[in-house]
Length: 330
Figure (tube, rainbow, N blue to C red):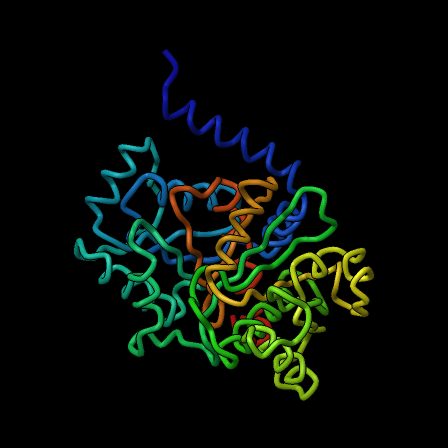
């Protein structure tokens, strides 16, 4: 009888190879990150086979040098259960408390022992709570936010969506930070002057739809240098943001409409639904990071594909390389 663990790893490898051919934009990002060389990543509380496996796969891909932070006995038990080999991997032992492990992983980043922070099997709020605490010393100059990179089949470029994970109902100044974080992120992954579509339900300014007012204000902030490094336009409805034909039909003259690199969503609900629609109904693959901190934060989950896990680590390498070289925010 075939070894189920070996069979599972073989299936994952085959799925990753198939995904690379279907999602070439993500593969290009992984290749670019590999050229930077592996970086040290503190992985907080990796006490299940899924989070350990993600770290090991990223290490095998030449992207990271994992530092496992948590209770040794639980990490070793999880590795044994998943048929994973931990020999040669650095461990920093903590008590069996996810928050303690998250705090220690954040400390490694603050002290320069790791260039990125990665989620293990703890809850996202436990990891982010430790990362944004004043004691951690990892806060950047802006509000933390999350950005996904999506590779949609047939699209001629990757698409950044923000914020679909962290900020629930951001106001104008929070959106300013979210979009600037995404612009800096786009620069790190090779987009020199990203085009930003600020989404709403409609493309006309309507005082009854607050997101249209925010969009207009953000565009004027870009005109005044409060947002830099990109071309912004909005409000744009989804159809004229992604379709030049739709924009022309509605009489919209725009450098962004029909060819956005970044989409700024009005709130988390809209962002979360849109990225899941693209993944589950349009065949997109995605990877993402928490930005705006002194180090990038990799959020992985059990439902993530191996491609998503590896590409998220690759994104962290590209962002951390930019931070180290230019002193920009994550």
